[in-house]
Image (cartoon, rainbow, N blue to C red; front, side, top):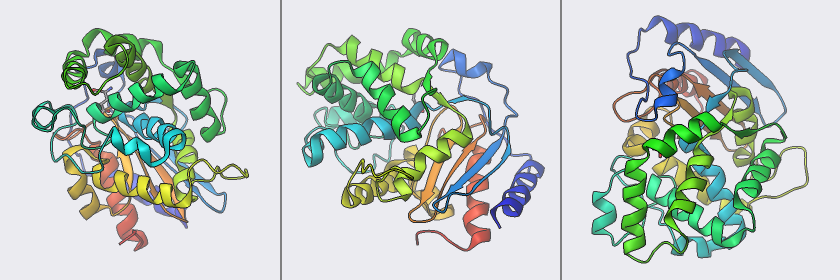
Length: 303
Ligand code: GLU
């Protein structure tokens, strides 16, 4: 069923001539070929279907914020919500205005300010955050080869002016415990993690599987925590387009400026799509269209 459907969707999206812009504020991301396109689904009953550039690595960028939050939530339980809220921001992912108005308390863990606050918590909690985050991602991905991309990391480190502004603003409100450069460094590393669409859909299956790593007895998040994280992805996972994504697609997920989107249907499947051309809000144009067609043709969404 999924195989034919993905083939149909892939073809249909390619005929639409959808227009978008590649992210260039992180210079390294502008070097990716704009016509890349991949769709990969992994189901709870262990089936895999992919089409397009499914075995090419791409930069996860903000999608990796989900993994950092998962680890911090596992370590701190509901105390993590002393550091980040659970409200959609309705603002661009790197906006400073709301953060100033709300005394440096980030609206949610999936905007930049929130992910920086989570990196700060991870630095306080872990002995070697850089290695431990990577080991955690490798564990949930069931793949020891997942790694940071040094060129993307360096590229963002050189140009991350707005993230520097965000963290300094939070620090001025007493919200950041560690050195700002250390937090930024970890955050840029996190965003530089790369995966293929196939690897990403397999990793996201955790969130469709009540927080248990598929094929293992290991429960990473409780069922209730998983429900809550999925709710945060639903309401906050698509920049200030979370409403539009929910309206058109109806699945929890997270996008990144590398052009990836990972989404899931609890109890059924996880899907990763990748196409670097973004709309004005920063979401992959083809990716959103493909997911809209998927849930519409399947007649399944969480609503
Ligand atoms: N590393 C990117 C930034 O902080 C992540 C943005 C994103 O994917 O939304 O600007």
